[in-house]
Image 1 (cartoon, helix red, strand yellow):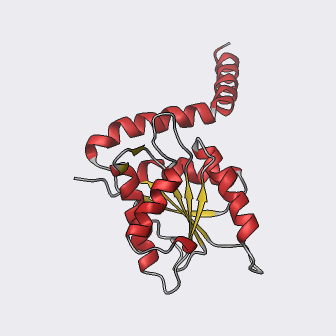
Image 2 (cartoon, rainbow, N blue to C red; image 1 turned 180 degrees about the horizontal axis):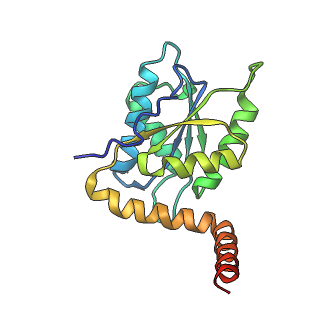
Image 3 (spheres, rainbow, N blue to C red; image 1 turned 180 degrees about the vertical axis):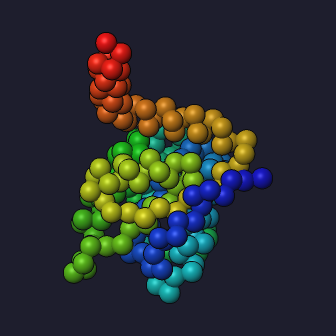
Length: 189
């Protein structure tokens, strides 16, 4: 059984110029189940479009990975009939923040349109909110599309996302806590 929240954003564009697929674990057998779900979501989206978007496959190589996440994604998409010239590989990132940092550079070097490009980011549904926040911190206006997450994977993934959000917004949270403490002190005294 899988979750369905955040799977389909009602603002998903009918056409996107770029589809950024965020990486996940790669093993010697290829993309993990999580990464395959992300890729299948991106493929399903692209197959509904009259003109195929350009895929930005974003993910470097972890210490325990046999190849970059971007290279594994490219092989998977190519096996599913996506030509290599429809893919840009971003192989330097090591986090969601750097996924967007380096993907933005690829878009900037590649985009030739008169208007800003329409960018869709595909990741797991539990990871979507934080990913959109991080993209916007890099001045990338994106729309998100989340892939499903199995119930067995959801709890540990949500704990990891909450921890990451707390770390990302620690100074904001510390400031809120500090102001709340001052406010409580003033009211109680």
